[in-house]
Image (tube, rainbow, N blue to C red; front, top):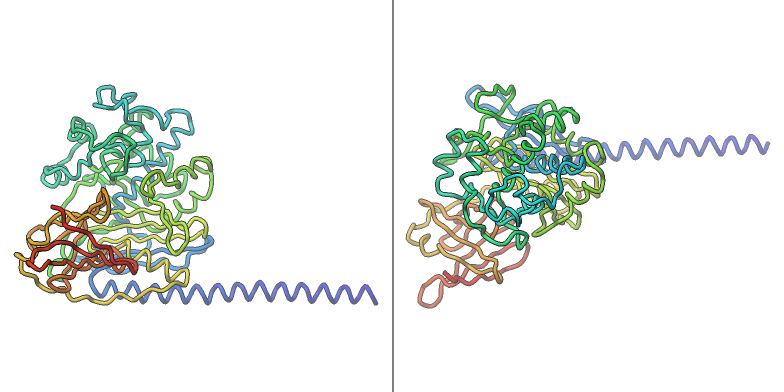
Length: 459
């Protein structure tokens, strides 16, 4: 009898475990469907506003929750975006370049403390610039994409990597190497050159043979003008609230700083690999995802979002926007690829994370942009001090106003009124310009994250 009782208890235990297991699967499926429906509703709102066209992938704990295309890969031929559509990923390229460098370090072929002169002996101040500085945007080398000739020349005419390096090689450093952070595409151009010099292979070949093929990322590659890329999206922008073709650009010129293309599904394979030692050792991965200066590691930004560690990066070029956000302690990944360059991928990424983690978010609504007298806009142009050595530069181009924080990208700001402007790329961010009793603009107030930060106009 005792044996039969134990057998019954064991049977009950097994039934309970099966019930718990099945309930957890059912709950996960219900929760996944809820997240999927919320994401779908949220993204469709952006599509309706002509602010998104592309593909989205969200995954957690190794399970893909949503993997879907929206809008058109090609408007002329009515070809829709799908999870297999290939997009320019622009500066997401930098994380692959950083990986290539760390793989070479792991093989003993370079050291992150190597001076630049080891690879380019005549580089000015190259004895002070280390590979580490190039990886972390702390070299002081000016960003060649900010030079006046960039839009006229290196976007539309083919430049090889040597010729590109010559455009910034003899420019003075903006600060001493290692002193501070300033985003510089030039540093990653140099890393691509160093990779080629060490491996005796083109950057394209090295990335393909050592990263893409081993990870089965068969839909990713290096874009060249004469290369046929099947399932590639065309790039678009918005003009007068209508979708139009984006400006032409030769992406090969961006080389190791931005010439790669990929799909959401391939980038998810990349995400999966970064939890393993398939490419580099764990210690090297930890260095990659550890902030060096200004919350930037090796090809990745590192920030806290909803009190969770997030490593990620944006990519921006004509007609395209890209974002990958990896919550590495939660095994969660959000990938956004868009063939519309008005897409606020930073904001969308945070809102999708809010949906995934059950935080507050808002369905985007159309904000009415008003017309402001150009003479009023001119009054706002200047340099505003947010804090010591950190400024917000306001510039005007034609009838558009832009803001650029120290060391960061320039973003357009849109008028809601003659004094209040909003920033599409930054969640809930507004700028209000304040005049004194003499009607002279004396400061601005940055409204962001529930805070109002006053910045005095100093120039």
